[in-house]
Amino acid sequence: MTVESTAARTSRRSAGSKAGTTGTKGTTRAPAKKAAAAKKPAAAKKAAEPQLVQLLTPEGKRVKNAEYDKYVAGVTPEELRGLYRDMVLTRRFDAEATALQRQGELGLWASLLGQEAAQIGSGRATREDDYVFPTYREHGVAWCRGVDPTNLLGMFRGVNNGGWDPNSNNFQLYTIVIGSQTLHATGYAMGVAKDGADSAVIAYFGDGASSQGDVAESFTFSAVYNAPVVFFCQNNQWAISEPTEKQSRVPIYQRAQGFGFPGVRVDGNDVLACLAVTRWALERARAGEGPTLVEAFTYRMGAHTTSDDPSRYRGDEERQAWEAKDPILRLRRFLETSNHADEGFFEELETESEALGKRVREAVRAMPDPDHFAIFENVYADGHALVDEERAQFAAYQASFADEGGN
Image (cartoon, rainbow, N blue to C red; front, side, top):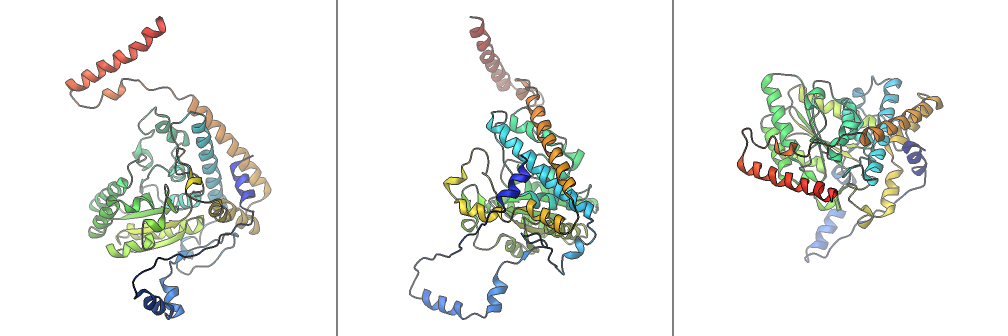
């Protein structure tokens, strides 16, 4: 049974959640403020609500958008099937990596389950000469940039320091330090502008990272220097156990206004909308119009990482509501109702999905252990007495196991 088919069944369940608001008692002036707010015209209230770009509804129906339709007008049925294939195979790889961690083959894994549309849509919007700065969860973007999935797993297995040459695919190594990659991306984009190139840079980060000082500094520098960079925030609603409403008083995309560049919120479970909005933002960057903040409004279906237990801080009803918006099922429904894919396509993809899982599993288990002493080799260019001492201590420690085995 494939991951895609499981998601398709679960997301057909009727799901819903009751939304409510809570408040706290304020000063004696609070009732007057509340009364004044109640008298605001309906149009003003609507204008204050976050605007969401959506081209495919959760039911898989195509909706028109005068501003962004032109960015996907040329997408062919073959390309739509390609987007679907990307999402299914990325989810299958992600599920296999999670299983490998549970089996003790990986030290840790950060799942992207539920965020496939945000990553595939934005990843396919990039050009070959664009440069990508990821966090540690952009497995779908890595797939779009041509990075072999098995290369993503070496770091999580602890056998290498990254696994690929960033310049081979214009895809930087995964960044564990929260938010720092936005500064790297901004600096790189400033260099691109000085070189006179027409390429763009895109930096990925989460809603939790948006609270980091590094991200604010990146916004400042990119705005002042008009850097050709797109800040792509995947708002999956939870910064580990902290909900978005405890991180920001305004929608994340609106923060861009304070720094002097545009921000837009896109349905992060709509691969077509993510493709369109990211293409628009990248074109702005290449045209010398400066940075853009894209907030992909999505949901983390699984745990933050395999060391996390989301059941401790969120309810099942929340996940069930988002399962009804599953990005893969959404595009499948559109493909089926538009006659862009037949059952043979889905069956072939299921076979390909299982083959990918098998290849990843075998590749991870075949990864050689690294040289235990390699960690000491490149600390200093010309060597160092303290490092030499630590190497000798480590060698003695390793030798002690051999002595115990001999006895």
